[in-house]
Length: 378
Image (cartoon, rainbow, N blue to C red; front, side, top):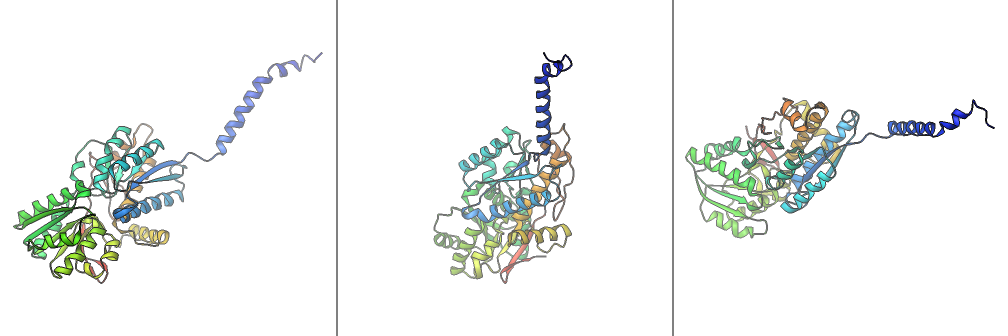
């Protein structure tokens, strides 16, 4: 017979085992790494828009890595999940669906207006903020939704390009040439340019749309048949470079300008001597001496061995905005509420503040291609 003093131990053995198991599980949970904060990225990483997407992806990764070196977000590491939309609306929607299924907290991107218009309803339905580094279409301006951007809509800045063409280049008869595969952007940009240029006294004598598969030699002949004294191309860097080459074979002197979309290093790499003298609008002050920008530029170069360009900079800014909002929001706030309530976010070149619709203001800059580099116009 068991000692009566020992019986309680055996009677409570199952209770003791359960309590021990709970203690072990709690200890293991305390020792396991914390759940990461997941940030999605979507952009075109292949094809003609890859320069924009790759720079954007790199800027996002760099911002996350630098934050992880300093403890992440409240001790949680940041994980970046990357998707390639291939500049295709259906593939973009599938990519966003995968990001939402991975339970990302925020999506950085898309990098083009056409893709943003295609997927914004998914972000709204999932109540996940989408912060674009480069989307400027007027179609997404002034909406109460989950779409944010760290660059300004075209209506706020295209007048600078029109003013330069009219008053500095003395263009009076311009031809506008627009990429149809990103109409949400090109139609906004062209419409705002036409309005400003006409108000100054200029005339847009023709507007021509094209796609990458079109014969650019024939397009160049069609452009110059209008006898313009200026050509403005609203397209990606690859098509802009190739089209300028075709134009220069026919007319080496006609002034040519581009919108911000083309303003990547790839434009100069592909265009070579043909793009010398090209006037380029861009979201990047390449002569900035701001300490935060110089530190970003150095870190990007060391990490990726290439220039960040405007897309790398604005994606870095967009990701840091997301990180800061995630870190500062209260338990009662959604991330959208935190983004809107934060006030000024620190950008690498200038502060970022969202209005009630998630829009912001950002300066644009003009440059001219000289000796194989972008030389700022002052």
